Structures are given as structure tokens and as C-alpha cells.
Length: 448
Image 1 (cartoon, rainbow, N blue to C red):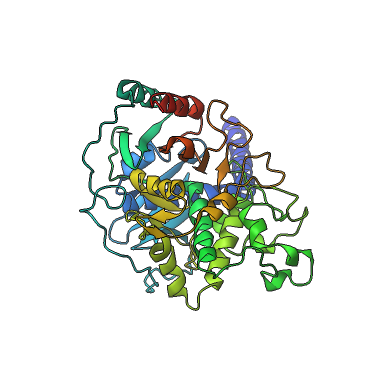
Image 2: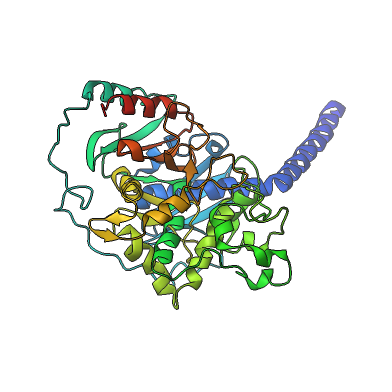
């Protein structure tokens, strides 16, 4: 009897210690759990309701990496929402809105309240690619070794590379196209930070229209009384503002807090102090791209005009009709990270730059903007221009140094090779793919 009483007392003490330890663990890890659940809910809502994938596929592929794989997800088809949770301890909800994509919401967000949505033009499904969405007649180029070309592309489709799609466009014609199992030319792919190049391009269009001066400063009232007033749009486009920012997706950092906690992502970096000098302190920042999205809003009288311009000025203008750029809770475009489109439509953005801003006889911007956007940012070691990545210092040693690209998290890429008249798009789930070998093989398969 005494042994039983002793055992029960000790058991209760141990149980109490376990509960206390669990409570302490939850308390200190709450911010991380919040972000994990938020990522899972947002990604699931976008994948299922925007990209048309199943919950099972999304959990087995898009959310199946550490530490996101500790989360579990549920969807509400009627509400078009997804809920992510971590061990059932914390839940986050994301809701899909037609025309605006999915957004993480807080308890006080009214999901029934009507939202302004962008006006879209109808897709042209009769004109062949790239100026429409129809397949073009097969063009056989005598100077292309198609066997070598296809063998090169095959090498990047394996478990290690986790490639989902590759499209190669030469002289405006698709000369190679391949998709992983479960994906087709109609599948929308999340561009992640390729969205930054969309944001940057909009400034190029407005500059060409005489509506933006990239040397404009005194951008925010919060910056009026300190040295931040000297920051220009040019500095922001080049990620060279000197503003504090931590871009780390593996920790609780500025970027993860912005993407998974903030209601208005355009304000996050506005609140940050200077830790360097403008034009002397390159620092890659998704916060900066969302600041730019906020600045774009100020160039229009109404929010509706701001929402429309991304499509009427660029996206639908060049037939990227599959694209959806998602907004935050304040209905600002998440210009750093959240554009979805088919691989073919991502290629169209590359072709616009390859053709120096001309699209089917219309100039959206001119060659001067391309030269500006591909000029290396000071202190970036020749790797970055204006919301565009560069090869100026030969990061890819076997590729021409004037190649430039739109790049995104986990290896989303649009490569523009002016000398070869080539655009190459690759999407996937890992950035470990050997891009140098891929591009080298594609280039070598074409005799110039």
C-alpha cells in the first residue's frame, strides 16, 4: 500500500514536471509554431484552390520538408480555406479569394467582406505562343541538335533536383518542354522571388510612361527627419538602401515574420532603421520589394487602379493570363514572393526582356531600362541589378556573362541569354540543380 502511495506521488510530480516543461517549450517556441502553421496553411490554400492540386499531393510534396512536415492541414472546400496546425497546439487559417489568391488571416479579418479585385482581360487562345496561348506549329531548326538538347534537359529531372518543369524558347519558338509527373503546360508554378522581377518591371513601364523618376527620394513621412529621406527608388530597386533586414527562411527572421504574420507587408521595412549608407550597402531583402509595391500604390489615385495596373500594364498585356499575384490582408500585392503562373507564361516575361521591352510591336519599356535593370548594383559582387540577378562576375562559369535571370526560392528561374536568343525556364523544389551544366548543354546543342 505504501509503495502504491509513493508511486502515485512520484508519478504526479513527474507528470507535473512534464506539463511544466511542455508549457515552457510551447511558450518559447510559439512564434516558430505560428510561422510554421502559417506557412503550411498559406501554401496549402494556394496549392489547392489557386493551382488546382489536391491536399494529398500538396502535403506529400510541397509541404513535405523540414520543419514544415511537422504540420498537418485541413481544407474547407465550401469556404475555400485551409487550416494548418502544429501538433494540434496552434492553428492558422488561409483563405482563397477569386482574383486575389490566398491570404493568411487573423481572427478579426472578415472573410465575407467584399474585396476589390483586379480587372482582367480575356486570354487569347487562338494566337500561337508567345503572343497568344495556342500551340505554334512545330518549327524544326536545322542548327539544333535536338537529341543533345533533350538529353541535357532529362538530366535535371531526378529525385535530387526535384525539377517540375523546363521550357526552352529559341527565336520565339518553344524548342523543348518537359514536365514532371503530375504537371502539364497548364500547371501554375509559384515563382517565389521571381515576383520581384514583376515588381521591378512595373517601375520600368511607369518610367517609360514618364510617371516615375527612379531618383525620387523623401519617399515616406516616417523617413522625413532622418537620413532615410535620402533613400531613392533606385536604391530600393537595387536592394541597396542601407535599411536593416534579415532574409533567412530557416529561422524567425524579418522575412518569415513579414510573410506569415503581417497584415500590410508594404510597411514592414519602412519601420526599419538604417544600418548602412544608401548605394553602399547591398542586402537582399523581400521587405524592400514589398516597400516598392507600396510605392506603386502611391502612383495611382485609387486602389482599384493600382490593382488593375499590374495586369493591364504588364501581365495581361503580354498574355501571362494564367498569372495570379496574391495580395496581403491590406489588399496590397505581395511583390516579393507570391506570383503564380504556368511555365510558358513565366517564359513570356523573359521574352519581353530579351526583346528589350517590345511586345508584338508595342513598346512597354525601352532598351535603356533593360540596360539599367541589368547594371550591377554597387557592393553586390556583380550578382544583382534592379530586382534581377546577374552573371556579370561569372557565377555560372560556362555561361555568357551577359546572361541575367529572375530567381526564386527553391530554384525557380527564368534565364535570359541575349547572345543566343534564348529564354530558359526551370521550376522545382530545390535550388541545388546544376544550372551551369543545364544552360551549357542547351547552348551547346545550338550551332550559332
